[in-house]
Length: 195
Length: 90
Image 1 (cartoon, rainbow over the protein chains, first blue to last red):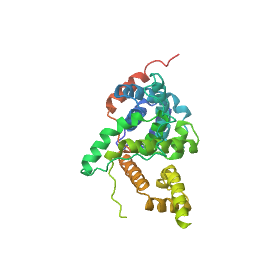
Image 2: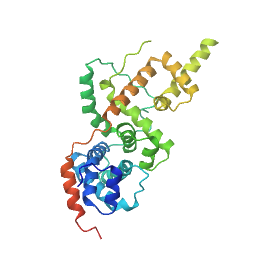
Image 3: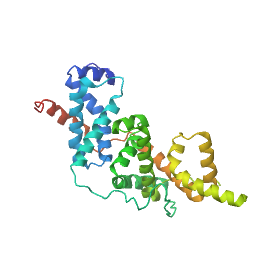
Image 4: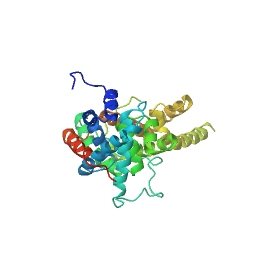
């Protein structure tokens, strides 16, 4: 291999012509992102490792169909999302869907005491609590928050990945955010406002 | 009359505001909506707390953006390479 690192575009071009070394570099570039997304979509560590392999295998087989004007990472997210959904659908339903007569996370504003621990402690606690809180969200809401707010995709990209219109995606996103906020409220670093 | 109107407007805004907080924070609310939200959270401690919490949560989530999973990339690359050499499923 040459000394200069290949651009992603070049790696994709070489991989599309069957260069496994180039594809291996792409895997290495995107492994963390894919594994992180799979965990946050609701898979445990063992499932995420196994499904991550499947994601990249599907990417390899699908390379001839990949349109290079789209972002490779967005395309991988779509495959990862679909594979995660497939894995999750094999599980028995873990929790009841939100009770339609129960608390609406949008309309009901729960009370909770404001805590004031050190900011770094809060951040650590936040990250520790985040996975558990995400697991409590309905799958659709969780996927929306993961793609938009953690993986940093645009609304348009994320909606395309999950296969819904942007308006429907934004509804899921907002509901997911509001429920997540309520679950994580004790661990949020809220700026004190001046009234 | 103005107290009645103020109370009515407050109740309507209090129902409206939580539903539009994401749009507000994402910069997708029109200026009239932004004005309405700013006015309401200025008057409503509950909504102010929720909006501040939502903003804080999004800031903390965005700091996580790009953080990868715990898995070993080298192991994954090896596993994928090995499976590339397997015959494709028939």
